[in-house]
Image 1: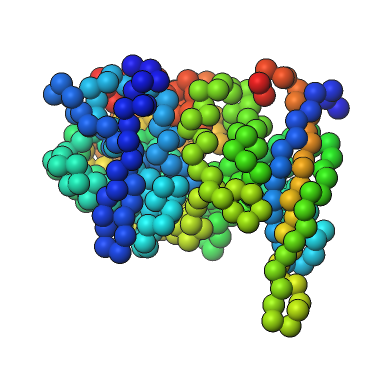
Image 2 (image 1 turned 120 degrees about the vertical axis):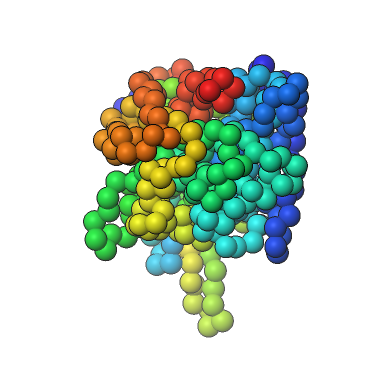
Length: 74
Length: 295
């Protein structure tokens, strides 16, 4: 595990559940970012239909990842 | 030459039926020609920042924001590549130019090849940057899946919202094609695409435009090999590495060689040690600018 880390804030959504939304954001992040250490949920929200049923869950995450070479990330 | 070259640029609206699209522009001076620059699938006009920095100041620049992207995100449909190609002609009309050096990068290589086929008299020279020829697709293959494999991880950012522009830049710094090559000169190419959204900032892209282009580039037999039939003098730059810095660029080398062997208009130039992104965002920008300025 790298000793130098960076944290970025990303949001995303999914229809099934908050957990699905978290997994979606992490999967998208992981397609570019390697060495993700952990995440923190900053905010949870969603959209609701006329019957009061949630249709979309949105999450905002702080995602922390390691940087192998600090020069790369300035 | 340098950063001042970029400060001379300004945004210009180009009317089309039902709306407008944006062009990042500076006029030519000293008898030099204008270069029309057409970006890739999820890019925008500012992806040319470093190329512009390396161009002689007299070279005019018209870097289009294609419909559905960035400053043209609200431009009306259709988003098919023929319409986007004809937008180049509309852009030239708007700038009172009969012809120009036309440069297409990635998806822009397909668009500019189509433009050259439809409006050959308006092209002085065509420069294609790692695009315009697609590998054969499996029958029934899903265009979105093919394009995802071609374009790689940069597509994932379209499904995310970013806290602010620094989060976007850090995302790009981690990109497998850029992280070993990053320098802060790339910022100005990549920090222009965010717009405010409910949970942060989102990349200004119309997904309909992406899906339309993906289908045409990958499985549309009339479009996918557009560069093979170019009717004007054309140089196609082929890079050594791909969208995730893996060996092999977006343009399969054997397809480029086959196309050039049967089309005397088409010349291939191979660039070692560059990948699909550093070709315009990094060290390749100097080579591209030299090709525009000096042929």
